[in-house]
Length: 222
Image 1 (cartoon, rainbow, N blue to C red):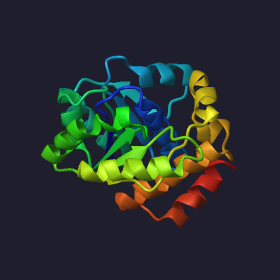
Image 2 (cartoon, rainbow, N blue to C red):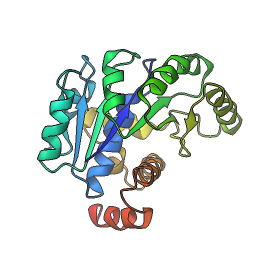
Image 3 (cartoon, rainbow, N blue to C red):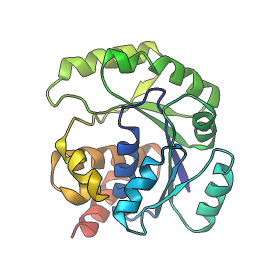
């Protein structure tokens, strides 16, 4: 079972939105997926309650119970475990990072959000896990803004994932329904970007090739 942790020092960067959309996309592509919500606000759990669907499995855990939860999930045959953490570089984030094979750091490409990257970078370096910043909610046509943001991330000693998730109304439309963009608007731009992020994540984890994923996704979406 591969484990992906989503960590961000600052709130409001769309971390849980990325987590649930990536989880649904993974599940739709044929990977049995679980999402562990370590945030006391339980936003992912609330979203799952609206969803009323068995998969992806969503469960609240404390950081102390995370190792046991991961072991149980592996024993139940899950292929992917996504760990959503509170908006702070605290014990939950450190435990999640140390448990993960890959860390994603959602971040809006704004100076306010980028200023918080440095503390997250320190935590990631102490965990010794491959980590990448994922620019999220970027203005659709803001190419220069994203390039400037990449330079700031480079200075913090972090790498940037190649897929940029843009600000899309599809996320706001899907959330109240307990759905993901790949379900609500499967041929929309938001769904395409989430699928591209998933392809890249799978390549990082050496799980499968993009061609294999595309074939699975075609079957899943009919």
